[in-house]
Each structure stands twice: as C-alpha cells, then as structure tokens.
Length: 335
Ligand code: AHG
Ligand code: MN
Ligand code: MN
Image (cartoon, rainbow, N blue to C red; front, side):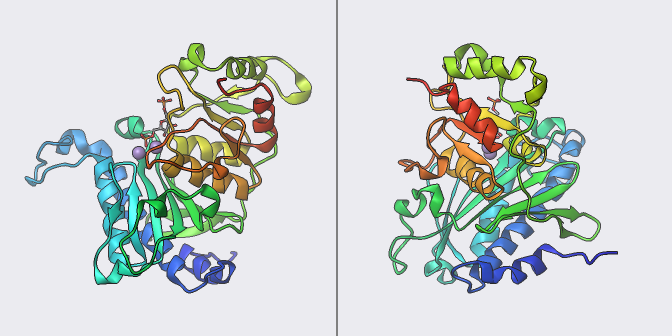
C-alpha cells in the first residue's frame, strides 16, 4: 500500500512553496479544513431536517434550526476568528465585511473571502454543494483596522484559494500558486487524504455547462457558440454533452477532472452575469489557471479585473483553455 498523505502533512511539507513561509498560511488552511468538516457533518444530516424540523422551526431538542448557508457562514467565520491569522473576512452571506478585533487578530496579515455554501438551490434536494474561499494579504496598515481596500484586490493578488465539495465524498481542493491538489475526506477517521495530486485540466473536453434556460437572453455570440457545441463534427468530438448541476463548485470540479467549459454569461435578468467576482470567480479562476486552464469574463482574464465593490458580479467563462478560447472567438460579451 502506498503511503497515505494527510492534508495537514501536505500543508506542512509544502510550506516552503509559499513566499512568506511563516506557518501562518498553514494554520489558516487548517482552520478552513476543520470548519469544512463541521459543515460537511451538517450537510450530511440535512436530509433529516424534514423529520427533525425545518429551518426557522424548533427541532425535537427545542433548538432553533438554522438554514444551512447561514450555519456554514457562522462556522467558517468563528473558525477563522478563533484561529487568529485573519484580520477580517468578507462573505457572500454578509452585506459588509467583518472586522476581527480581538488581540489575537489585530495584527494578522490575511483577509479571507468566502462563499460559505455554494449551490443553495441544491441544499434541500440532496445534490452536491460546496464552499469557496480566497485568501489575500492585507494591504492596509497592519496597526489599524482592516479596510475595504484589503478586500478589493485583483484576483492575481490571491495567495491561496480553494473549495470544498460536499458530494458523494467530501473533497478539499486548493492552490497556493504551485499547482492544484485535491484531498478526499475519510469520514470514518475525519481526515482529508491527498487523492488528486497536481491536478491538470485537460486542454479540451466534450462537456459544456450553462443554464440553457436563459438561452434567449444570452448575447448572440453565446447563442452561436452553444449551437456550435451542438453541431456534429467527429474530429472535434462534437456534439458536446451538456452537464449542469447548478452548483458552481460541482460543475467546475467535474469539468476540471474531465475537461469542459462552464459559462455564466450576461442575461436579461443579470446583465453582469450572476456569479460574484470576489467569492466565486476569482478563487476558481486561480485554481483553473494553476491547473492549466483559463478563466475570463469573455474577453479579459478574471484575475486582472479591478474589483470596485464587494458583491460585484461578472460574466464567467472557465475551464479547458482551448474551449474557453473557442467560446471567446464567438464574441460572447454584450456590446
Ligand atoms: P449560491 O448558492 O452561492 O448563491 O450560488 C449559486 C450559483 C452557483 O452555484 C450556480 O452555478 C449558479 O448560481 C446557478 O444559477 P442558475 O440557477 O441561475 O443557473
Ligand atoms: Mn455561490
Ligand atoms: Mn452561497
């Protein structure tokens, strides 16, 4: 049997990869891993909600049930604050960023951005959901409180990013800028084990993922690209297969392993697309590029976009590099 490597062992082993190797980032990643196990436990119990009480109701123990996305938000925030390496976080679930004030956090160097539960429409129907996180070094004066500018950094300033997928197995996948590594949780022991070392996205694939219900309000170039994906051509493996879970983490993960393109273009209802630059697009863009793939808004690298507000949305085209380039060649952005 080959030696199993746990996430904790791997993080320590790779500490030297990180330009500011002081152990802080390692502790931060460990806090995220711990919180994700707590969330995974609750996700696994979500199907029992109907018999133990729905969100907002009291359960049999007389405790108020929380919605899972609010619960996950609390778990990650509390874990990150308690751990002490973070001076503030911004969460998709919170209107404003949260500043950590305790002595432990006051001179911490990092900020975290998080989508605590991604795929909310799938929570109640037993379909894979996830958590997405993104870590930056603060840029404001370390002696004062964390500032908005610490969160509005371009994606190419990320020092680490990753996601947790609560699927048939729970997985944690992350990068610190030296490739992408994936870990699978052994639930009986509670340890993440290295299962997907140095993951690479195939240059091309045969899956396209998009909410085609919005087809009629997509930019013309997106419609044309989708029609091209559906044409028959043996040489380029077309027609492609359409696969869309509706949980970005799960759709991205599948496409990363198999090769494919995920698109959330602008629509009539969501002129800038639906996905959030800071909590969803930047972290997945960092992972995609580290795995040899591409992430753009249709004409520009996601990680080069200057954020102007916390909850900013951008169109997203992400996945296998040849597929994203092909999509872009159709002019997938509204004029
Ligand atoms: P969240 O649950 O964090 O709000 O994100 C949902 C996102 C993403 O996970 C998914 O890809 C997308 O919304 C699906 O949107 P549509 O239902 O519009 O396709
Ligand atoms: Mn999301
Ligand atoms: Mn969410």
